[in-house]
Image (tube, rainbow over all chains, first blue to last red; front, side, top):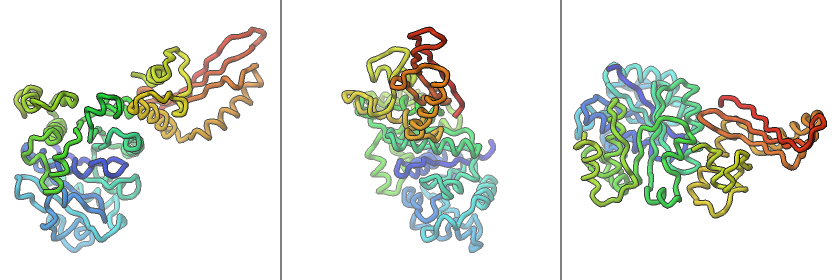
Amino acid sequence: MAPRVIVVTSGKGGVGKTTATANIAAALAISGNKVVAVDGDVGLRNLDVIMGLENRIVYTLVDALEGNCRLNQTLIKDKRVDNLFMIPTAQSKTKDAVTSDQMVNVCAELRKDFDFVLIDSPAGIEAGFRNAAAGADEALVITTPEVSAVRDADRIIGLLESMEKSPIFLVVNRIRPQMVKRGDMLGVSDVLDILQIGLIGMIPDDENVVKSANEGKPLTFGDESRASVAFKNIAARITGENIPFMNLEAPQKGFFARIRDAFGGGR
Amino acid sequence: MSIKSIISSLLGTGGAHSKDISPEKQLKDVSSGKQAKGRLAFIIAHDRVDIGPGKMDQMKKDMIEVLKKYFDINESQIDLKLENEEGSTALLATIPINSVLGRNGRTARSECSSRK
């Protein structure tokens, strides 16, 4: 299989890009792929914290680009899972420390060693986003069921199309099924009507996401929470598996039994 | 569900000639989720062609000037709006005509559309 470079982006900040990057990267690694997650948010790095690898940073991507180290010295191996790596970026620099050409080169280098390169993009539509996306072939757009987030997702999808990223898939995050049911939240079908783009995942709003960020341990490492299952399903769909979408509106009781049923005894 | 049918259901009209989709004209007792969708459809239609509601008003005035040369039209009943359907954006204009070439009371509906 040819290596795949995927940028994870959203336009609006705070919708769950970094959480999605960490969890999808972990799930891809668990299913046997060699994966590197790259923090593309120079100056506001967070992927290291979400993945719980902040204490292991020696060199950053910016160090490699400035010639202070080789690119492979920036790779942090996650000891909890085989085949999972992370490249941190600099916290004390600004977006200007990286150029689009450099990101294209970094991605070309990483393609030699990895099955998947996931790049966590900064919010916004400026240089930071463009750099993060420069070396990617494909894109995941994360949104939440809110007017502002969907509007920004539409803008980002337009930019990704103009940058010829393909395929571009949508992840709808933080869905609260009860609110959707009583008509007080946009449903996934509403969001798809508006954005006219392929859906690859629906993540329920789940307290376990907050807990996993507190602990620095991606949910997909083992947790069987609804969000964890949803992220694992995205990873499986990325690798081409045909996994039905979770019924988010079903009642909480007996959830695991239904998941087992719905997914034919799990993946 | 098409945007037109949503708007129709919002307004309880259901006719082929749906009304203005601007948020102000939506009924207040519509669920907040439906309001969100209606507002989003309106916002994104304008974002995609980079024409704000103010520019639309200006364009409407310009169009009226041109149309008046050819038709006797009722300016207050002109309805101009942007709609998105299946990835393309359309400018829909409903322009009731009082008389054209001596005939009275007919309504013409013209449409032009383009890819986003």
